[in-house]
Picture 1 (cartoon, one colour):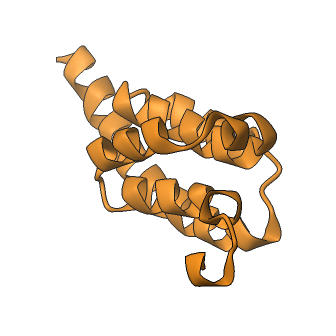
Picture 2 (cartoon, one colour):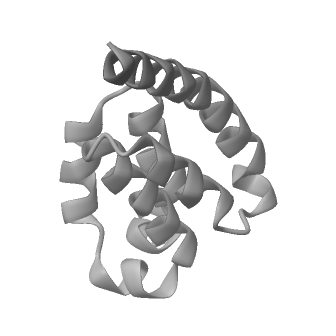
Amino acid sequence: VAANGVAFHDEWPYAVHLLAHFYVHDTNSARFLWKTIPSSIKESNPEVNAVWKIGQQLWLRNYGGVHEAVRGFEWSPELQSFISAFSGKHLRIFDFFNFVSRALKVL
């Protein structure tokens, strides 16, 4: 990309990159990536911010908030299948955690 004179920051798929880190449970790498994303990209790309909201909820272990963040944004066609795969994988985990949490409260 750099050889062609394209500013890679403008063309880099940050939303996909962030989501990939979350998908493999690498929240720390996602946090460091977020810190390196130029503020112009954060301000101009709402999808990057929407993925970051998912990450913030994962960091807090607020699995209901993750679900809301996934459902609360109109994802681009490029990310739609990735989001579906991500949410399907993680929502099963969230259901398990919610079940365990409710069970422990009963005990």
